[in-house]
Length: 476
Ligand code: ADP
Image (cartoon, rainbow, N blue to C red; front, side, top):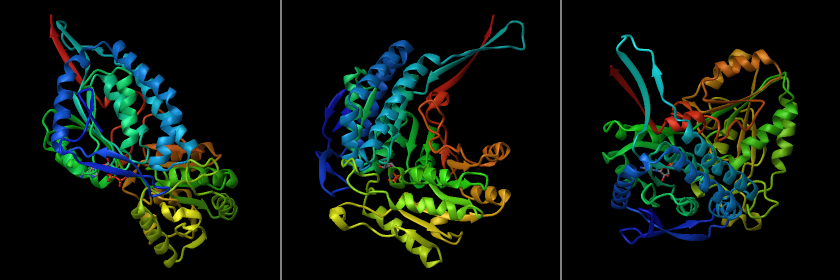
């Protein structure tokens, strides 16, 4: 369904499309296939609503977001079950994501009231300088399928807190989750037109409307570097504001002074989270050669114990991949690595037994002896493969870790304070976990350097992505 101007409605074309449960291959819903025209209508409604919404006090906007937070928490279990069915992650992980998603409503309900201006010293005695922050206007948001609830709230909450209105186009794989987020917004009493939803299985025309419609002031996108770059190029000709959260290729570095078992436990947890389908998933695990044996033994043990299956089964610890193409890509990378000399320690095949062949399952995989001539070393995997590389020297490993055009997340295990600080300062990445595998929260700025994107989401910074800075020079 589309949600435009406060009303649920079908597509102007009458088209709809099915969404699939990736664990079973079964259709679980039929959703409106929105068009470029629908997007234009939604933008118009956001333009109209902007006048009223941006003039509300921040206390009033904050109240709406508080209500959305409370409702989302009340609906946590139902939303988590839907997410597991539509996206595949195990129920426990889905519950965590709903909490993370709701946290953005809570955090930005508060941040709405913390948009302060400034009075600056002026060079002339008769002059006064004032700085004011104002909402940028109408926002076009495009979100991915891997975190189908929190990636919507991470954009909607700060936009609404800032006083902007928004049109969201969720990923075609997970529209049902986005619809439930919009049910929360509707029931929280967000005024008509302030937040609009265009579901579609044909994203290009809707994206085209976002980047070419002169009434859209800002594009916020989370997805592949390829699509993000294309949208940014088109948006540039209209000088639209941009926030981009793109791909990653995270290094995970284990120094000889770290506890190899503890580091292996961390690697097994963060690498296989969401079946490796996260832009902050470790993709190159560098382990010092003096402890690589101990590290690999524990990693292999833990990974081979992971239980793949339908996420609704509480025994399941790892869910399916998103689709058949994702399974094929992972398999290609593993086959290429093994052909070039990597050692397959566990996994390395599509899972087909016990009915898993109906879904898109790949065995959790550990590769050792990975080298820089392998595809897995350079290209984002987005799947359950842990490639391990040995290293010898701190400067070398830092150089290797930085040798990527991505710059989103990096992880470091060390007990040496000086080394931890050198890595924190030296790694060209926007998010660094030091002995920490989950350096993300609604209160923290999330985002990347280099080809991983522009701007930050979450934290104090997140709301400023939706604000303009205005200077007033007064002569008195
Ligand atoms: P992924 O490979 O993770 O699916 P994509 O970048 O293809 O990454 O998808 C992320 C989001 O971008 C989704 O909402 C998808 O529908 C959207 N998208 C894909 N292609 C286009 C396009 N040409 N224009 C606008 N949005 C697009």
